[in-house]
Length: 202
Image 1 (cartoon, rainbow, N blue to C red):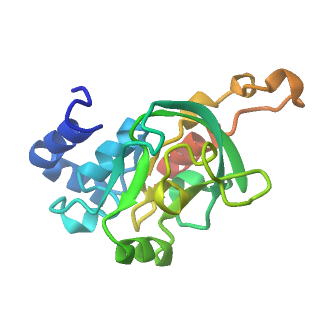
Image 2: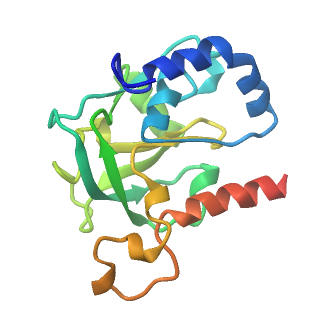
């Protein structure tokens, strides 16, 4: 569909107007949904995130042009927040994943929504530093409000994030893997393992 109007906007509209009923049924049956990068943009602009309870009728947040006004292709540190997100069970407190986007700045519609996300523990990942200080650019690669890199809905089953966990499945995908102690797997694999384990438990 391209990103000519805005990243993910056209496919998000297709979902809102053509697949809404099917998606609502899928979610009601404990279905899992993940949106990575462009997928996160689609989930937000389709109204599936922050909360599907609004019946896809309103868009409560957006992912806008990076503050740098350019495509950002780099690795970032993410702080794992305390949530009920199915996808991030047993994830390390800080993980390292790549980003590759031009429109990744998470912007809630207002401060009340931001506070709601905090209170409901829907903020799953925040951009951070290894020393846990406030991450300025480029550690927050897009200028996201409150350093938000990923959120989930209130059920914890719908999850969107800008960084790419699928690009750090094996330890050899880490940019410094030859200088690090060998690991069994990359930081992103546990996210997908959680989805499989949740599905098998139903």
